[in-house]
Image (tube, rainbow, N blue to C red):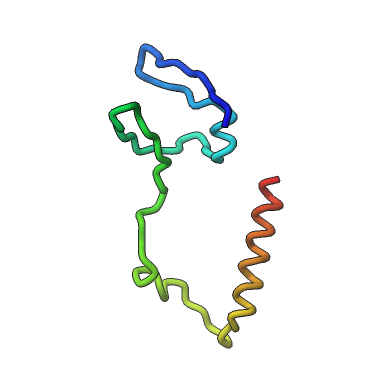
Length: 89
């Protein structure tokens, strides 16, 4: 892990180095929670959506058609992951 140096502006702003923003895929407007750890501060990216449970969202996307097998679902997930990986590289 490389160490980056930044500085505090007169307005209290700190620039997160570009390499770190790119590694985490943080875009303009990303919100963070800021926690005082006693030794410094910890920034965590804030999720754009509130945390939910499976029970809260199960059934929100209606599907009509024959039931999918576990193998079909895993294939669809695999294809989605490969497409996402390909798009990011």
